[in-house]
Image (cartoon, rainbow, N blue to C red; front, top):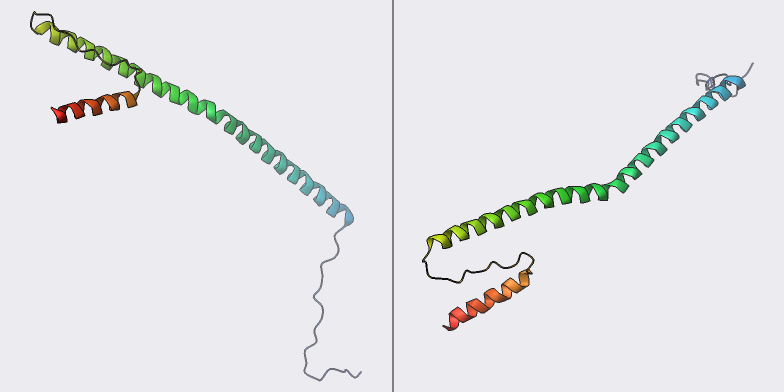
Length: 129
């Protein structure tokens, strides 16, 4: 038998391919894979729903935390104002017996810009005097 290939040249053969899978086993594997993917999809949807619910709850959580902290600050402010008034009362009780006009504290709800304007007026008056 004569070969068209020169002598000493290695012959290349196609690699042996695995036998084709049995149709029943491949359909079982596909069904298992489909179930696995469906379970992963359901888990991902559940997680997405839980995250979505958490996002909806965030504004309420922040609002509640803010109110709690604000309440503590407001209570502290009230205590300071009460202490301030008590100290003023004691100071004036120690003062002269002659009637003296007591300075009034600005109302708690006075706007800041009003205080700044008043301060500028007082400073201008002091510079002019």
